[in-house]
Structures are given as structure tokens and as C-alpha cells.
Image 1 (cartoon, rainbow, N blue to C red):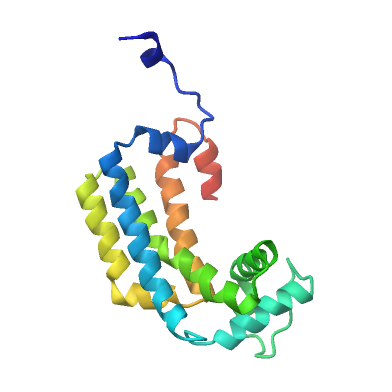
Image 2 (image 1 turned 135 degrees about the horizontal axis):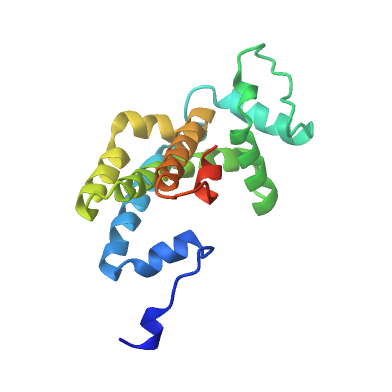
Length: 193
């Protein structure tokens, strides 16, 4: 053994880089295939149609209302009454953030940013199964089954707040599982709540 192999890994090292450095090259392909498949299936209807999914007009209006009304915390009034659409602002924050940063129209941001999050949900399931100590092949199969599941693909290909909900629920579950390995509350514990 040489001196470099005995180095201790610092606790505050980037999670993703640590994971990628510990993976063999052949194992990097599984999560990549899951992510590409999930994103491609969910972006396909958005590339084929101008507006995809139910209530597209509501989400478009509220994305513009959050941006133009400068109401990042307090939701804008909805012409649809007390339907609740405006009380889930994370979707509109993401759409508006992508609109501002990349200078693309709000409808393009709505059509693509949220379904990409939906396409990443199978990847999160892959990482959750790996955290639960399932084999790489089993995790790959679980991720691919979720990627091609027609019910979940239909739901998460639409630019709506339920797609964002799917993504953040699985992300929270991943952080919860990781936090259970820590002896005392740490970064994953606090990211879960």
C-alpha cells in the first residue's frame, strides 16, 4: 500500500463527486441510461405538441403572474378562484428561474424544465435503491421500470406542480435514507426537513 491509498476522505467532500469517484466506469452507464431514458420519454410529448397536459393555461398564467407580480412568497390571485394551483409555488419558481437565467420564453421554460425534473425521478429511484444496498442490476431494473411506466411517465411529462412534487418527494426520501446512516443529525438530516 502506498501513502496515497491511506488518505482519509474529508467529511465535507461533495457528495456527487465522492459517489462518482468510487464508481467503476462500467457502473456509470446504469444511472446514465436511466436518466436519458426517463428524460427522453417525458420530453417527447412536449416536443411534439405546443401545449401538453391538462391545465396548461393555468400553469402558464401563474408562471407569468409570479414573475410579473414579483410575488415570490405570496401567491398571486388566480382567476380560477380558490383552486389551490397557486399554493404550490416551487413549480413556478423553477420555471421563472430557468426563464430568467437562460432568457428563454416562459412557455419554453414551462414545457421543458418541469418534465426534465420528472425525467429525473427514475434516476432518484435508482439512487434510493442503491442506498438501500440493492445490487446495481436490481437498481437499474427498478429505475428503468419507473422510467417506462406509462402512468408515471404520463403524469411526470406534464408541466405541472405534481411533477415537481414527484421529484422532491423522491429527493426527500433519498436524503432521509442517507440521514439514517449518520450517528448524529448532519447535512442529510437537515436537508430532509
